[in-house]
Structure formats: C-alpha cells, structure tokens
Image (cartoon, rainbow, N blue to C red; front, top):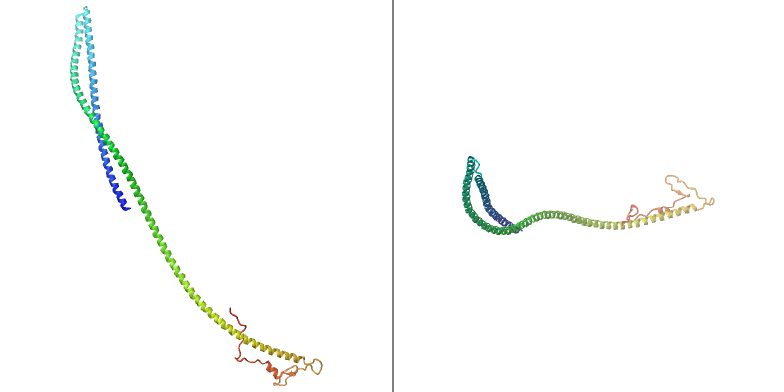
Length: 335
C-alpha cells in the first residue's frame, strides 16, 4: 500500500510538470497568435491611410472641377463682353481683370494642386505598390501563421486532452489517497477496538479463572466438609447403634425389673384382697379389728393380723446381679 502511494505521488509530480510545460507552451502559442493578429491589423491601418489619400485626391478633383467651372464662367463673360461693346471700357477692363486674376489664381492653384497630386499620386502609387507587396507578404505570413497556429491549436488541444486525462488521473489519485487515509483511520480504529476487546477478554479470563479457583476451592472445601460429615455421620451411626444396643439392654433390664415389681405388687394386692374377704366368728363378713402395737417394738397390724414374714419377703425387690441401675427414662431411637 505504501509503495502504491509513493508511485502515485511520483506520477502526480510528473503530471504536474507536464501540465506546467503544456501551460507554458499554450502561453507561447497565445503570444504568437496575438502577434499574428497585430500584424494582421497593420495592413488595415495602411489601407486606412490609402483611403485618406483617395479622399484627398477626390477633394483635389472637386477643386479642379470648380476651376474648370470658373474658367467656363470667365469665357462666358468674355464672350458676353465681346457681344456687348456699348458697355464702358473701364468696367469691362475691371471685370475682365478681376476674372483674369481669379482665373490666374485658380490656374496657379490648380497647377500647384496638380503637381502636388502628381507627386502624391506617384508617391501613393509607389506606396501602394509597397503596401500591396507588404500586404501580400503579410497575407502569406498570416496564412503560414494560421497554419502554424492551427497546428499548435491541435497540439494544444491534444495536450489539453492529455492534461484532462492527467487531471482525471490526479483526481483519481487524490480520491484513492483519501480512500487510503480513510482505510488507514478505519484500520487504526479497528486496531484500538481489537485491543480493547483483547483487554476485556483478558480481564474476563482473569475473573473467570479467579471464579474457577474460588469454585474449585469451595468444591474442595465442600468435599472435605462432606468427608467430615460422612465421618461424623458414621460416628453418629456407630453411636446410635451403640445407644440402641445399650438402650435395648437397659429396656430389657427395666422391663424385667418392672415386671418383677408388677408381679410382687399383684401378689401383695391379691393377698390383701384375700385378707379383706376372710370372715370372722363374730358375724358374717366381719373382720377382726386392727390390733395396736403395744410399745415401740410392736409389729404393724393389717386386718387384725400382723404381716407374716413371707409377705415381707415377697414385697422385697431382688437386686440385679450387676448392681442397682438408675432409670433413665424411655429409650430414644435414632434414625
């Protein structure tokens, strides 16, 4: 891309040089054309001078005509004077003298004008010939210059076309350069955006790795906690099983103890009921009155008779072989 831009800049420089050269040649051609137009105007100026000379000749001819008219008048006067001899001589002489002087003056002026006209005619003739020769030369030169200017115009038009092509190329070069600049700016913008995206990705990756590390740590802690809980659960299960075994043995002992007491109580109640229902000789269903103990060593009396020793032994609770066990309440079954 950089090499293409450099090549385009070199071509642009060459096109600018060619355009300046073409402009210089065009200026030179314009100067030649102006010189040709000026040279074309010179014969027209000489023609104007020639026309002025012709006007002068016409004025001289008019003056000659006036002189001829004056001569005719003078001749007519002379003829009239010759026909009328009765007129006084002085007046005739005066009139003839005045007419003669006028005619002489006119003749002199006519002669002078004629000489001048002849000189002027000769000079104008030679001048005319020179002017015609110069005019012909100028015409030829103008034709040559026209041909040269036409050729130069064609060359200039070709160069102008080339310059137009060069200008089009220059404009295309500028457009390509602008597009290249826009592409470079867009590339920079995308590069900055890509760097920002990479930075965001790095930050997201760091955050993700941190979260993964925390999750792994939590998972490890959870696994350790689960292992501890499993150990605790296994211990609790063992304790529960031990407690169940202990409670079951205690329950069995307690049940046996309670059954033994219940049997003793039941026997005692049966004996008591039996003693209450025993008849006395004094009447039907009359029991003996209770006997009071005389003294501190007296035995208790129930229904008129003292407890026998057998009943006291029955009410006693046989101690356990393993010693007295405290009652701990109903056993709790752990699930």
